[in-house]
Image 1 (cartoon, helix red, strand yellow):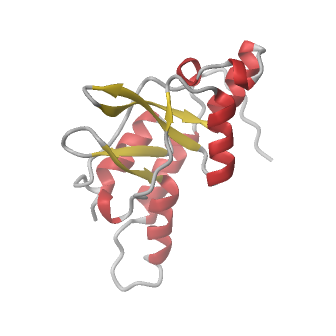
Image 2 (tube, one colour; image 1 turned 45 degrees about the vertical axis):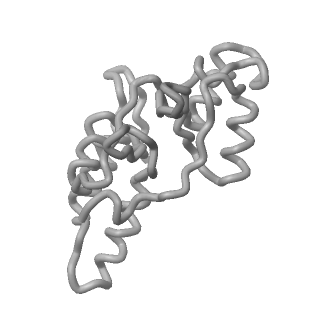
Length: 162
């Protein structure tokens, strides 16, 4: 199975020069937890980062300023991981797993944003596999990716189990 078969094609975005209050409002209105961040380049906008709802919260906390005073560029993740529509789902899962991310922008051959692949998209396909005769996404692959994403990023992280 290929990324283009599962990706979301309608993707909300924001710009580096926008403020976090506007990005947060977009996330609220569109019921999403991430926005690809766009910057102009050669006449067309390019994805230069990702902004999550957690990024917004942490920027407000660490900077101690209201959201309307904080530019997206200071809160976004600048380390961009992406995939291509023709990539196998297993390749995208490996990128998510290695980088501990839940969503990947899908870029075409010219690096233009054409979609977004989320762990939820892959999970829905895995769930469909339980009723379909042919399974496209294995539970083990999805579970391994989720476990890697959710693992503490540093040795001193507090892990509490009930």
